[in-house]
Image (cartoon, rainbow, N blue to C red; front, side, top):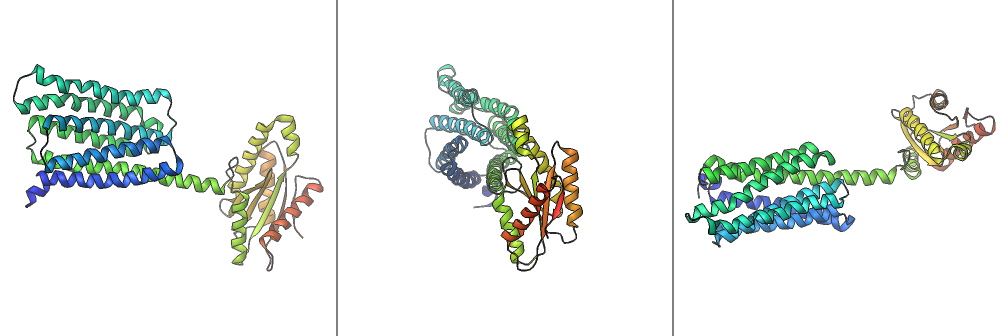
Length: 378
């Protein structure tokens, strides 16, 4: 064994295929786990496509070790390549979108057209009489050119509907380069151009590594989305009551000086009854945005329930009276409602429940003594 064999020989191709097979296996494990957990069509398509890719590369490694019928082997590898490529791209599309009948027709139509193109593979030996190598190359040319058609269609039709567009388009560009290198090396140099052979071994590894990153980052996105949905309120995007209470408890257990602001939108039920729930939801979002902006640098904001919103201020330098008044003023000026606000500061011995209850009581006093005001707990 020498350096030439490791870079350009049949061993180099076998090693390249083995590396791709390992990457595909890792992708398969991730995709299968996601499918079993979430039962989403995108993961099923991705899982099936990766099984086909794995079979494709296992067959390529087997062919490199043992001789088989060249024509039948070539046909099988090309069809597996077309089917797996289409299904992978369908799976990527489905990771971000629901698939309608129109999209199914498009993707499965590409596979059907692959079988139509394959008619050329069986027709060439009857229509052309040349050497065995010439006949086999002519048999494969339909597959080779059709793959370029699929690449271009996927490149221009899928990216607008998915995330990670740049990574996806880069992967397709690498795959296009891989196909082009293979075509030039096979049909112009008879597979004997060392530089093209090396590129043909390296590019598939890069392509599947990019797909692995795309799938992995999608998993991270989904995990982050699941986590965010578990700690935030779906309407206002503020932290939910459970998370807010937990953060207050954590600070109190560490004896960190904090303050809790408790607000309630004035006459919110009347607003819902007279102008509708959609207007009520819009107002909640507007008030929540003000809370989030004001709390951004000094604490966290949450929705405690209904029209009640809260802020935990962890910055001891914040003057709570001015802070609360600024929030009240902004709500009055920037929305069609007003808010009654109460706040309380932590003192040694207080529990989280007691601190929040004090702020709530201060808010209630503000509401029952005229509304649209700020009251400190005393």
